[in-house]
Image (cartoon, rainbow, N blue to C red):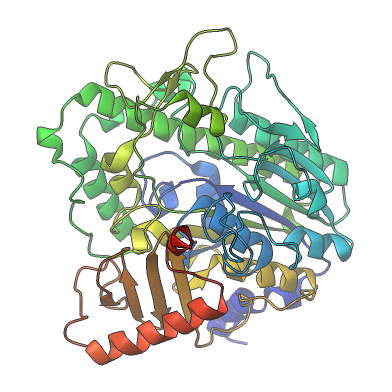
Amino acid sequence: MCAMQRRQFLSLGASLLAPQRPNIVILLADDLGFSDVGCYGSEIETPNIDLLARNGVRYSQFYNCARCCPTRAALMTGLYPHQAGVGHMVDDYHRPGYRGNLTTESPTIAETLRAAGYRTAMAGKWHLTPSDGNRANWPTRRGFERFYGTIASIRSYYQPPTLAEQETDIPATPKDFYYTDAIAAKAIESIRAFGKEPFFLYAAFTAPHWPLHALEDDIAKFEKRYAAGWDAVRAARVEKQKTLGLTLAPAPRAEEVPPWSSASDKPWQTRRMAVYAAMVHRMDRNIGRILTALRDTGVFNNTLILFASDNGGCAEEMSPDMSPAYKAERKMPEKTRDGRPITYGNLPSVPPGPEDTYQSYSPNWAHVSNTPFRRFKHWVHEGGIASPLILHWPGRVNPGAWNPRPAHIIDLFPTLCAAAGVKPQKPVEGVDLFQPPRSRKLYWEHEGNQAIRDGAWKLVREHGRPWELFNLDADRTELSNLAAAQPQRVAALARDWQLWADRAQVLPWKSWESK
C-alpha cells in the first residue's frame, strides 16, 4: 500500500480500523463564526482546538442550519430540522415542521447509541423543547442518562435561567459560578463516572453566544488586540487563512458595517470584541480540561472527538428598550445574584462583561467572525451556515489534513453510528463521512431564507428577494451572481428546492399566520 493510499484509507475507512467501539465526544460552540478559532484564521488563542485540528482533519466546506435550534435538531436526529419538528425555534406554530419541539418519531443519536450499549451524557444547552416546565422532551427523556445544563438558550453566564441537573431545577448559582466552566466540569464528571465503558458525551457550550459575559482577567488579555478595529482584524484573518491553505477571495465589508475610521465609541467597540474573544478563549481552555480528563482516564486514543458550531457569527443587536413582558417571556433576569439591576442593551456608556450587563457585538464584529464570507446567523449565505468541523480520532483520520468535501450537520448522526458499529433505527438524511463522497444535493430554509447546493452550484436567496446563483468551486464567497446568465439552471435548482421543501415539511415563512 503506497503512502497516498494509506492516507486515504485512514481518512475514509476509519471505522474499519477501530479495535473496539470508540467513545464519542461532540464539542459544540454557539454562535461561533467560521474564522473564530486559530486553526481557521483567528487571532484568538485556541490552543486546544488547534491541537485537535493539527492531529485530526479539518473540513473547509461544512454546513450547519443557520440557527441554534434547527442545527441542534439536525444534529440529534440526522434529519433536516423541519422533519424533526424544529423548522424555526421552540415556538409552536401548529404545523408539522414548526412545532418547536423535537419530534418523538425519530430516535436521537443518544437514544440510538444508548440502545446499543453506550453510556450517554450531556452538559450544556438543549434548546429543543419549550422551557415551560413540561419535561416530556428533556434530554433525560431523549436518550441521555446524565444531564446538566439549560433547557432554553443562554440568558446569563453567571445565573443561567432553566439550569437543571437531571430533571431538578437549579434556581441559584454560587458566587464563583461561570457557565462555561460548569459545563466542562459536569462533562468531566461523566467521563470519570463512565470509566472504560463506551460512552457518548455531548458538551454543548453556550459560548460565545450573547450576552457578552466574561471574567475580567480573560478580557484584559484581548482589549489592546482589537484597538485596530474590525477592518484591520478581518484583513489579518484573511491573510492568516491563506497561510493555513484557505485561499478564498474575501467578500467586501457588509453594508451594515461602517468603516472603522468613521466608527463612533471606539473604546466600547473594542471592549465588545475583547469580551467575545475572552469567551472563546475560556471555552477553549475548558475543552482542554475535557481532553485532559480523557487522557487521565486512559480513553483518549479510543475517542472520536468532533468540534463544530451551530451557526455563523450573530449580527443581532441588543436593544435597551426590551419590555418587562419580553424579558419575562424569555426568562431574562432583572437583577444580579446580589441584587443589582441589570442594564440591558448595547449602550456605549456601559462596558460589557460583568453580570450586570447584557450586550451583543453586532454586525460590526460578526462580519469579522464570518471572515471571509457574506451575511450572518439567520441567513443561508455562507456566512450564516459555514462552520468549522474538526474530526479527531488518533490513528484513524489523516492528521493535519484539510478535507474539502461538502458536508452537513445531518451527516454527523450516520457518521457516529458507523464509527460505533451501530445501524440507525430509522432512515436519516445524512451520509457517513467515512465513506467516499457521492453526488447529492443539500438544502436550507430558515425564516424564508432559502438555498440548495448541487455539486459546485448554489442557489440562494434572502427572504422576499430574487434567487442568486453561484459556482462555489470558483466563487466560494458568493461575489459573482450568475443567475441572469443561467436562467435554466436557476429554474431547475429552484424546482429541486421546492420538491425538497414539499417533502421536508417546509412552508412559506409565516404563511401560517394568515390561516
